[in-house]
Length: 146
Image 1 (cartoon, one colour):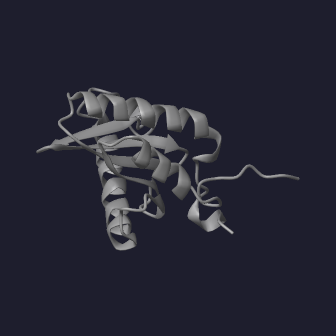
Image 2: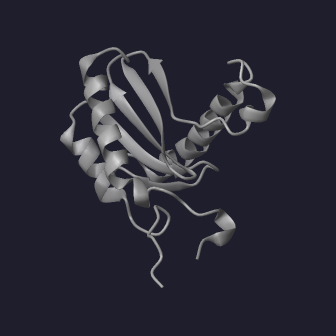
Image 3: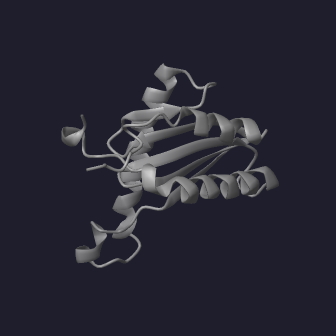
């Protein structure tokens, strides 16, 4: 019986490096689990910074899910509200946080404000990457990893 590879069993570093290297405005990219484990990072991002950022991104993703009540969703739908993406517009840099697969997220930092052309191009590239790799971007629950 063959099992489907997942982001926690294959190295996605090359994919993230291509994303960064193919787009001048992209600074860093990382794949993480929604419970804060760094799965892969682009080469410019240190392991230490990647691990710290993975924990922060998982926290942001969790906070975003908590907005369901604020958005008027009934209580029975709030816990099942699907997380999709978040954009943080900082001075001269935009941080993009996307749901990548089951229990994973993809975070990318891009030079420029959120309404600039380079960020729009980066979003398209990220979405293309996620759509193309969707079957392998998930991660198993930690207790079920080899």
